[in-house]
Length: 213
Ligand code: DX5
Ligand code: ZN
Image 1 (tube, protein in one colour):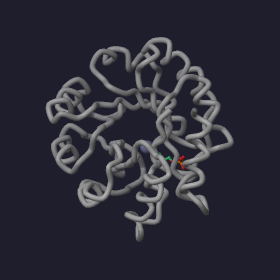
Image 2 (image 1 turned 135 degrees about the vertical axis):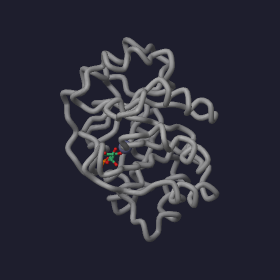
Image 3 (image 1 turned 45 degrees about the horizontal axis):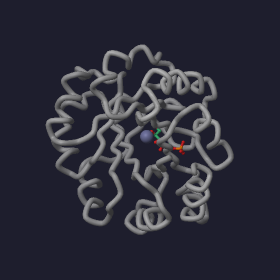
C-alpha cells in the first residue's frame, strides 16, 4: 500500500513543515489537488505551489487535476515537478491525446473517475494509463463522507486491471475505514483531513501505513 496525504487539508501557512512531517513519518506520495472552479465547483491552487514545494521534498508528487482542459497545462505541471499527473474522464480534453502528452514529458499518467462514472469508461485507456483513480467522493471538496457504493467498482477494477496495477482511491478515507478500500483491492490511498486535520499527522501516517502492511 502507498499512502498519499492530500495537502488540500494542510495549513497552507506552514505547508513546507506539514509535508516534511508526513514525509519523515513514511508517506509515499504527496497528493496535490488542483481545482479550477469549472470541472468542480471549488478552486484550490496551481503550478506555483508545486514548483515551490518541489525542492523541499523527495516524495512522489501525485498531481490530481480537477480541471476542464488539462491538455493545456500538462507541460506546466510536468515542469513544475509532478511525477504522476491524473486527469478526469469528465474533463473536456481528448483523453488519449492528453495521456500521450503526459508520457511525452516523462511522467506517469493517471485517469480519474467520479463515483457516477462507470468503470467501462476507463477501459479504452487500460493499456495507456499507469494508474486508475477511483473517487470515493465526488471530486471538489475535502472532508466528505466515503461512498461505499464505489467498493464494487474497486473490486471490478482490480479484476480487470490485474494484481500489479496501481488503483488509487480518494475521498473520505481515515484509519477507521481504511480496510474497506484496501479489502476491495485499492493500493494507493489518499487521505486529506484524516492526516492534516489530525492533531498529530505523523502518528496518523504511521498508523495508516501499519494497517496497510
Ligand atoms: C477531493 C480531493 C481529495 C481530497 C480528499 O476532491 O480530490 O483528494 O483532498 O480529502 P479527504 O481525505 O478529506 O476526503
Ligand atoms: Zn484528490
